[in-house]
Image 1: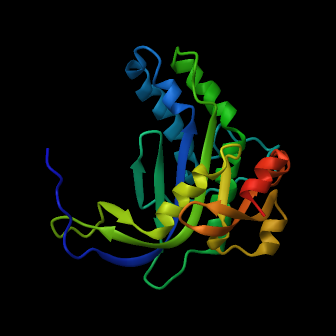
Image 2: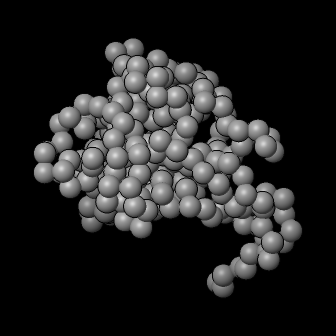
Length: 236
């Protein structure tokens, strides 16, 4: 099968929120014998848990003990791309020249943080369906905002893929510190006063390969628990 070329002209750039996630230990999971018999069931559990963040009902993995309140996003991503051990999700601006609301961005960030914090509940549900010992136990998120450009084929209106600085940045953030499960760029544009009320720390990621320094939000307690040499190497 040959690569099908994109049209010469794509979709004009638009503001977007980009989320990249992967599963820690997914490569090890795939070294187990006959894993192909169980991988679909496992992935379905994971993607169902992720998709719960934009459904109306409160997800099974959320509890009232979490430090953030559950708020349904009520809007699905415009684009989801499976990446082999996770996915990229993209929400584009509602209307031309109308920015994505701060409320949506904050609720998205909180819901993803909640899933990261409660992922053990999801992992336990996967164990009920997948009779393999070594299942991934952690999920990692990278979140940012920026401009994306849609790629189209055969003159279609809807993009078949996207490119953009912010997509690459989200992936870099997701992989930046493996001891953390959540890194959100301050490019999201959320008021510091709102963020400071929640369990986030605002720091600078100083060694982000190919991107230089980046102001980010982290889980406050995960950051405090990092080894000092890791903090010194990666953050200011």
